[in-house]
Image 1 (cartoon, helix red, strand yellow):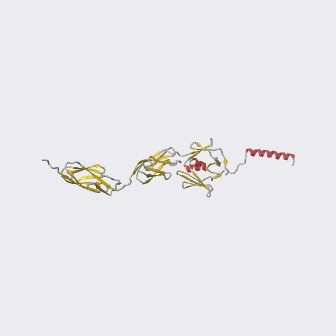
Image 2 (tube, helix red, strand yellow):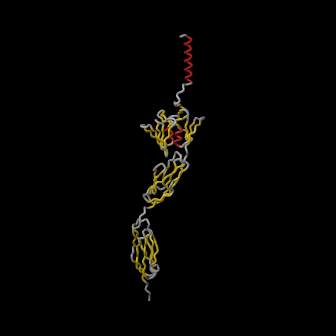
Image 3 (tube, rainbow, N blue to C red):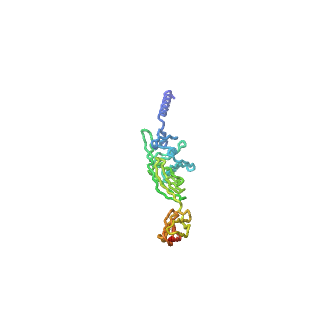
Length: 333
């Protein structure tokens, strides 16, 4: 080999090494490249354990980090290579191996297959828009991916008034607005838990239990925005029917124009719900009767003769009677 040839090979090698140092050979079209992309959710920048990566024109984001930021529960099934996230009304199952997702029971095929990078499952950014009902915008100048989630704007209860008997339970349902709001978590409470207690049954439902007679207000408040809706709950004693009535006297002898006498009625059972009684005299010109309290009537002797006083229950119309004899006043000589 001539001296000229050796020198030429040396110069070519130096030039080629320098070129590769500044201009590395491009990889295949499927290769992922790192980027300085930042991710922002509703104006909050996220600190991600695995930075976003670019695959062609698609940006991949870490599945777990995004959903955990939103308070979702994450699980991983290594047998099926499926990662899942659940939060409120959102349920996502992602088959990483096949690139198929189930979002609230609807199948979605990813245009760019998810992949695991440094132990982190990465999925296309648009996937979060699809699953969360969010808007995803790309700020090319700032290299920021903006994910805008619908904010909660209100809440309503299907039931605003509720009447229960002691020991009864009832399910009430809430609706959080708008429908695509991500954080639909609801905090349930009662102004008087000793009257009506409440506990969460599902994402949108709660069970109200009647504990003691009285009135309580059930409050449903959104976790986001603290919007409130209420339900007034009245708890009544369980209905107990009347089975009978009796009077403390079945006969009564009074003196014309004399002092009135009180008859006491006793309803059976004593715990009957409706304790109302109607008092009546068969001849009110001889002996009148007037209600004094819930279970008593005042009999006034007006003139000589006889009359029948009846006490009738409002519930069941059970009757008890007292025969009243009014004696005349003897004339003085």
